[in-house]
Image (cartoon, rainbow over all chains, first blue to last red; front, side, top):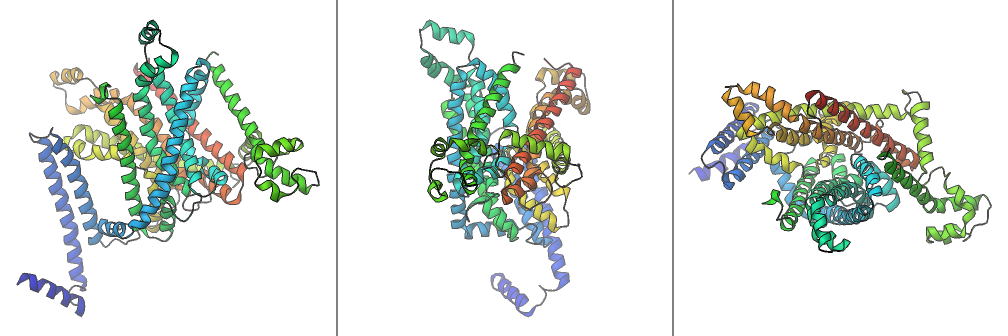
Length: 310
Length: 305
């Protein structure tokens, strides 16, 4: 009975311009949606309070559930408030609209992902980090160079290096090569500084021990100093994952082929297609977390002996 | 002196490398100019030179090396060209002039400082909430940490347009981006700092029957100061980047980001480099001011080593 009548009433309301279009009815629905949003918020908060104060609060399941519940209530509230107050799509699209856009433009998003993240950010990241670690190993042999390069490297690491993007776009063209170049410059100094600091991490006692074994420089390097430096190197590598994405995206604001996340964001903002912008942001967020997670996983495998990993 | 000497040596070496790089970078344009002026260059036409290697051209045309240092729109300007441009646009121009870098720098700096203030206050407030409420800690903290792995800067163009469509423009949209970028480092650092007192210290205050507010003012807040300053330094650098990037997507006409953008549209390389160095000097100044305040505060508190 109910199953049959609800679509019927809905259809009548749509066709005749009847009570669904009536301003009073719409206002009531809007207020109910907003009220529902706050009810759900209160419910989620109550649930989280119970979970956090409960006996199982330290289990990993609850530790995972609480932030997930918080995130979900936030999204539901966003959806209901946007629909209830009829916020314009130009200001804030509802999550369902963003999800629909995400699902319907997967090929475009994938092409942008490959262009910006795989070609631009990832290749630049590998080149920049590789060059930084090699430079650090070379610099490490000279105390004079180390004393000179460390303060300068620290200084440069704090500068707004994204500003080099227009210059590098001019030099390397609009395609991914220029984005990779920006990423190389951005990740180079944090990794360099961290690696040099890590290589200084061994104690005199440990180095003397290697000496008593008659270990050569490179034996001491690979068996003692490089492993000891790994936690520092990975610290730099982890900071650099975010920097790499920032560099690749911002560099596209200065010129790009007609594909790429930064290009899509700036053109979609121009067309006021904010659902597309949000879909790109979702991609950026996923890519950023996965990138960071992958590096953290490698770190866990390689520095299992370190106190912070046990 | 022993600490300054290596730094100066490395800096001098870097500048030397820069001058060397200028020669091959600008040789194509220099040879084109020389050909127009009637000089004999090898190979003779621009078409033949286009695909030729830069270093080969330098070797074949040693007479034109001098010209590479004084191009009007070089691919790579020399350090002295950048320095002269910086001097002319900061000291010699009136600061109200649209060509003054001080004017543009101030536009960006004001957005940076406003955003930094908002982000820091909000970040400290959230950190206090997180430390005192277990629910907030468990709900919000994982998201604050995850958000640091995300390129938040991608939001910048949208924030500008959305705020513009609700009638807010000028300083505030850029400040919002700056605030957003400095917010999360401050939250994470401050939470770490407010939790840094040892259990024994907290227990001692408990035996005194100290109220929560006094525990906060007398133990947690002082203990968090070193952490706060460390994250303030990260935060202000991020704020400046946010303000500069905030000027890019809207085609702003004022500010350091606008100078970068205009320079890249019109091929004014010297202008780009001077804006870049202006931004670098600004960032260095901001970070060292916070470093100075840090040293003075920690010394007053007896925390410095």
